[in-house]
Length: 612
View 1 (cartoon, helix red, strand yellow):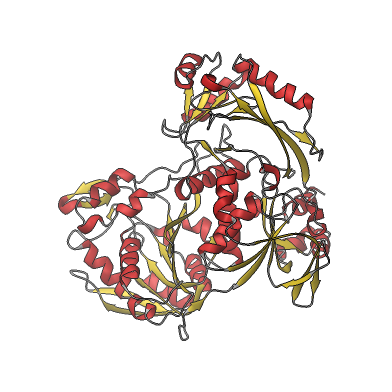
View 2 (cartoon, helix red, strand yellow):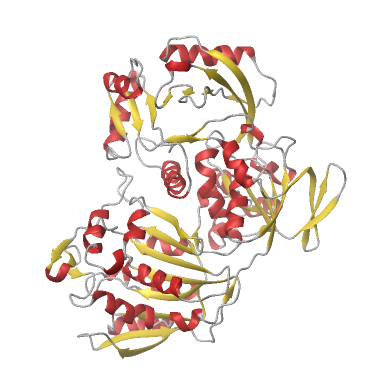
């Protein structure tokens, strides 16, 4: 990736006769000049016998397709069209994984769509992602999900976890796009493929056939489409059988933002959930706050954290409703240069640098500072989110202890009631859990105010050291203080004074304070959340004490069976929890996803070991 860009470059498209897109970079066309849809239907959809296989599905089964070379998304849309057209048992899901290094511009998709029947590409256009490198999960409906991995397939496929039923090898000609047609990529595909899984390709190049055969596939040439006499199909030896959903029931501990989004991800998959509170008050740290900011945390040059935050924001923006008001981040004079550098990496639809005059005009109040403007940022009311999530019954007792008992987890609540769970998610916020003690989560006290600001309300979120939100039904939130290692839930007059003083620097008036809210967040050493399996901490310590040569020979994979966590969101849970919940449930349920070691519970111990 270009270290100076948040986005990979789009594909350059030249339109030839018969509305055929041509890629100068590869000196090749994306599909046939005559009958492109018919060709793709024959080579990929029909050759993998999708309809015949889908007629064998049972209730709750899933089917996973991997495509190397997403292009204009025609294979995906044709596959989705067929999936929607056939009768299937309930709760079946189509997972479609696609790799693409050079994403097509939305304008080029629209150009092609004008010449396709029934606006075939319109659903893709409506949810089309920005070319942010990494993994994008896009739900098109309850039972169709596209996992689009933007970047070089050779760099990303080794991090993919999936159980693939069919593979579409749809890159440009092997002679013109050699980096996709490599034996190590075939090896990864073979490892991901389920027994009896199939593949197909336009190409019948000898080195491709030999490479696929060498890694274990059975390969043969069959009749092609149109002017192309031959194509290639194959399968992984063995008998294919439908893939059943692996998880039937999950116990969830924590009813805050993280817990709510986990519950929604489980409900989408019809996975039963036993839901316990982690503390005595629902919603935890945000119980009484009516406005929480939704925006990405960006740095002057793209880092792991900022790219993750941007993908998380885009996932939320695509899949959830929120109040899109825009956000103005006011700048000190020392911050202006880096802010201009950052704004130059984005287009005006995503981020703008504004002068004080422009800021005042946009905000509707006089502002004396330049600012970064996030047009698509906004806020949510977590209580509205909870109204939907809390339709699921919650056990209003705190889990006091969690212990391993043979093949299950033994949960004991504050009334000493016992229950058993095979799979447990700890979404416990700042509540101390012995099983997570090694993470050394830091509690951070935050105090916010509810204000009556009347006609002084800004049109957008205005942030400097604190954030003022637009008026909503006569109230506006002013947030928030940050006090590390403080767990006092009583309102602090000095914090109230601090918040109002910060507001007065920007917006010089004296509002009426209608309420004070205090919550305790949990954050990590690197300010990134922790999601995924909980490791066996003793085994991890033993591994970290091994010589470096031994560590390099073996990757640490010893986790506590059936125990997962989703914690450490700090002040950015509203933005980051939806994608994190989606990723965690995918991990537990063995759905297609890519590893995010930067969020793993093991990362701190492994970093410390490397430093030693």
